[in-house]
Length: 382
Image (cartoon, rainbow, N blue to C red):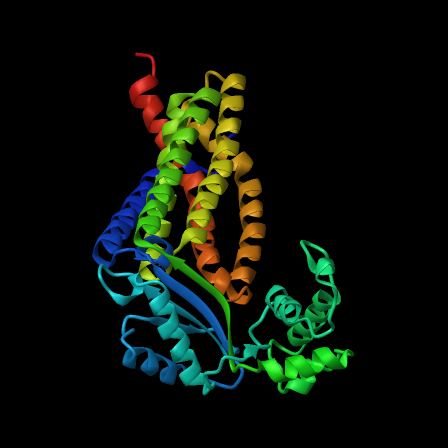
């Protein structure tokens, strides 16, 4: 092994920087706390879209006036669409189930200036409910035996056409005539005109989590990460040696701690997709580390008289271009998702963005130095 750049010689500086960053991250997490999503604290998350422009300030004020002062409302950029999050608190209104849903519905009606009516809403319906409405009234007088079970009828086809047209027009009809433009049966058209109306808002998504389910989700999320680290420890110990496993695990703890610290610092919300993102970081970072460890093991078999630190340095240099190229190509994709993937993917892509950078750093500057320290102080033959 010829003389080369001593990248491994910077391990003390690198470890010092990492310890400092980890300490700062732990302090940030302890002081600011993790901002947990409704999946982990209980409550409701609703995505609503209005037909006419709605001012987010007016929407927030209306929620406060109706007893939901702790509601978090986010407007999707460039859309007349909002995400409302009502996190649960012991004894508050978000624990009252259907009553809360009714109150929120009244808020949406008030903001969108939609009149309360018993008529069927063609702007909110799905194909199944619309077809059932027509089958119940049966304006075409179809034999009831022809509508039993899963048999498709003309009513199912009409419902499909109406909902498809609505989707093509941006989720809202402007008039009943527009909604029924493709309905050719006069009896059906007359029935729907008499029975239906057009609402001014639609709920695109509504998820509710009880406190007990949220507590269970939290336990499962923590268990998933702990089990992943334990499985990695066992795998690397068997595949390599225990000292390699210690280096891999401490590098992963380093990655997760710093990423979580940045996550909390930028006030991101911890949700189930974020758990998936952290597990992805663990797997991605480990992959880079394993590549370096495998090269170290191969070189140790070839040159048994060369000092361990020199072998590690050469092995890192031999794999660093592969590590950097892989990380950069993955990073490009994550950056695009972060900036152009919309609000729904931002929470998932942010930890990946940080984790890939930190994980690449730890694979080069943390995992190998930890392995070297353990090998030199606990496994080296006296």
